[in-house]
Length: 144
Image (cartoon, helix red, strand yellow):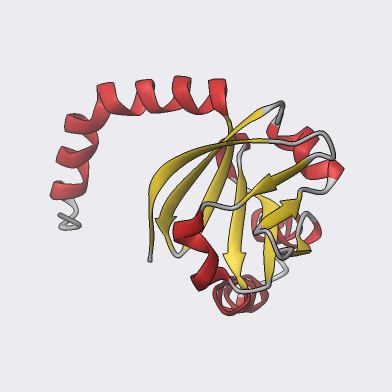
């Protein structure tokens, strides 16, 4: 399980170090794809296989399911972790997430999210202000 929040910087070669706390569980190759809210999702190979399997099981006759499967699967790339624990984020993914110099890694259970620092701060502030209301909604449906 991935938890926690870590800030790292892209180096001059546009590589970024994965947080040490995440490296062992990820392995030497990860799958990175477009995520929701304009961040990137990073999965271990085994977690990605679960996600991809669920997407493949969706009916292709509905436009929404086709669209979401395309969004996740066509945006995915297998990324190698080098000996120093760094990854090179594909250019199309950097553009999608608006990544600049400072990057936030957020552990979110079975995946890691990669955010542009200022976008993460704005998102986090917005969610923190709504945490009570969100918890109440989850309580209404029995999730908490």
